[in-house]
Image 1: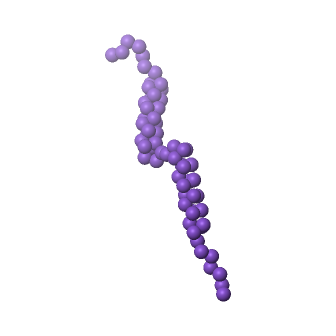
Image 2: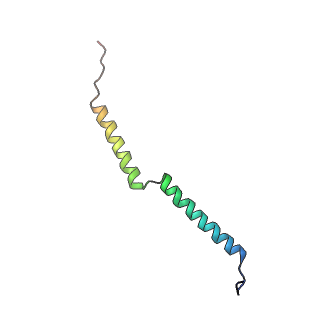
Image 3: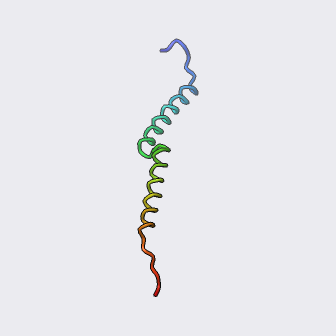
Length: 62
């Protein structure tokens, strides 16, 4: 056995922190994108929509 007593609350909380960090790492891989990636993709979408609008023909009624 260990020479010093173990604080069970600290051990439980440490174990929970490790599990939370592991879950967070898995979620970053699964769902995460950096802010720069999000901004870049949004700008590309706006640019594509603008290009489509510029090439659109106006429908005039005769």
